[in-house]
Every structure is written in structure tokens, then in C-alpha cells.
Image (cartoon, rainbow, N blue to C red; front, top):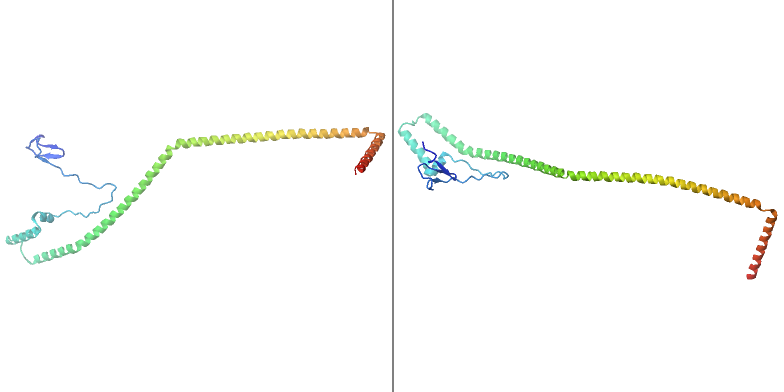
Length: 244
């Protein structure tokens, strides 16, 4: 049994047993990696079918190789009596011809139908994938908006606190204004009440003085005052005539 010294690998290659470990003559390079389509790329609908055994043999031996192989095999089978012609052979040949005709005629139609069904199925799956991708993008955007909203929670609470403080300050000042207005109305009422009382007292005092003065005038003083008034009127009339 060979040891691991005879089987080594270097940079992905295989070294055959019996060769030295330093040379490059026994290094078999690995084929390049097959490029796969990106996950987000659309499906690449390329019709690639595997080769059959006849196609591989035709590539190796030539175009007419399968035909000649079949002809040589048939002749050899007839000469060795491996293939005996009898009435049932006609049935087998007819069945083979019919089967071949069906394959040649119906095969392309079935292939076209299967390709159509395959394309429809892929289109439906592609549509579902796009719809799912749109839904996932919407969910991601919603999560991002929620994250942005959560990041502004402190600011929202600060604004809410300031708003409540301003509302409380406005309510306090409104209550203070109401109290001030009520106190001013009460003081104005007291001032008006004092002014009315003083006015009534002044009127009463003036009426009392007037009645006292009128009551102290005698008839002789009243006669003298009346004559004095008549003399003043005559003097004014004469002065008015003189100036005219």
C-alpha cells in the first residue's frame, strides 16, 4: 500500500504516484470553476440538452459511424445466424419503422409542447419570486421606517414634554389673568361704590347749604336785592343806548 508521500496535492492538482514532489510534469491542472448565475439575475433560458451515446460515438468516429456500425452488426448477426428472418421479423421491422416515424414526427411536437409548458412554469415561478421580492422589499422598508421612528423616540418625548410644559404655563397664566380680572372688578366696584357715596354726600351737603342760605334771607334783603337788580339792568340799558 502506497504511503501519502506518493499521493500529494498542490494548488488543487493531483500528483501521480512514482513522480518526485518538486517537478511540474506530473501536475494535472483542474478545470476552471463553472460560473453560476447570480441569485438576482433572471433565469437564463438556454436550450442545452445532454448528448446521447450515438452523438458521442459520431463525434469520436465520424458522421456515418453509427450507420456503418448498425449495418456491420446486422450482417454479422445474419452470418452467424444470431438474427433469423421469419414472418415475425416483418412485424418487428414494421413496429420499429412506425415507432421511428412516431418519434420523428411526434417527438418535435411533444418537445415544443414541453418547452412551452416549461416556459410557462418558469414564467409563473419568476412572477411569484418577483412578487415575493417586492413584498420583502416593502417589509424591509417598513422595518427601516420603524427603526428611524424608534431612533427619534427621545426627540418625540422631549417635544411632548416641552408641549406639556407650555400647556401648563399657558393654563397658569390664564388662571392668573382670570384672578387678576376678578380682583380688578371687585376693586372697581369698591371704588365706584365710594365715588357714589361721596357724590351723594356732596349733593346732600349742597342741598342743605342751599336750603340754609335760602332760609336765612329776610323779606327786606330780598326787596333790596330785587331793587339792586333793577338798577343794574337800567344801567346796562343806558350804557347800551350810549354806545349805539
